[in-house]
Length: 379
Image (cartoon, rainbow, N blue to C red; front, side, top):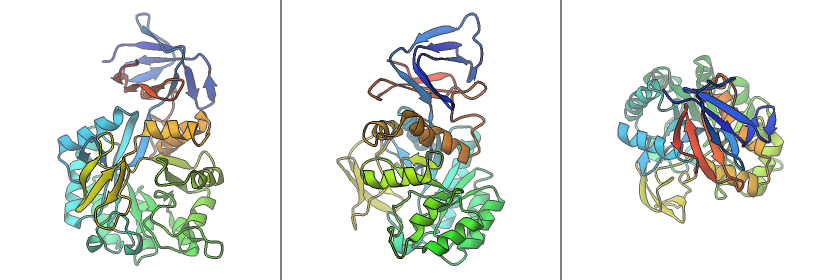
């Protein structure tokens, strides 16, 4: 059981706004409304205190892959991202053989049951060969509802999201199937028209997988999926804010069109996140990371990112000039709500897990707490 702590002096970002010299009381694994008499006081004056980050789209880190690694590898990747403030992570897979993906789902579901990850996101194989990105074309398949159901069942209740090219045969029926089972249907790696995307959202799709990337561009006569996903209040849009995947103007367009409550910043991280340049495997495909940018060795497509959420936070505030409060929504509250976890994570409120991040005045990470225990002691 973690010792009781009173974190004082920081600018505390709450759902209602920022308290200039607030305090957060931690007792055991949770935030409390009052402090025990023996609570330790931790002075965080001059710092920001924000909720732990929630990443709904992440393939690995620290040299370890969620797609192909052992249990120890997955835990290493999870820990790498915790060191950068992500206290809740959904493990994303990439396209593979169906039996292999079902097997991975079984392994990852055990970690979800232990509370190490928040669930599983299947990115592929039900995506468009026209917009495959860093996915093996030979392993792609139509989103047949029976195949989609096979992966959902293999995840034993821990499938959180499936990315689909909903215009493909079976796509709309699979969206309905996912919605019926409480799994997020995400539109991505798609060549859909505007009208086809509207149909998918009406059928139950609620997320845009890394908006702008791996889909047709925004056209003035054929607006494509981007316009349909941005305009619909039912859709949360994922954005990768690493300075590589999106031009700042595209991010600003998406953020302000969707609004602060409909954006989820993601990493789409692969093994190299928090690890370094070099050669890696993303599923069956070889990736070269150079100057922190990951690209396929064959073809040169961007292959995920090396982003960590602390860097996304700093960039959002210092480069994109978003408010700290809106950045917290995009990194914590919105993805937590999307996962149905906002009753336990995503904000600094009594009763929720003590998942929090300490940032200095330059928005560099100085501390991370998960469930009442320091992952990175404040410094």
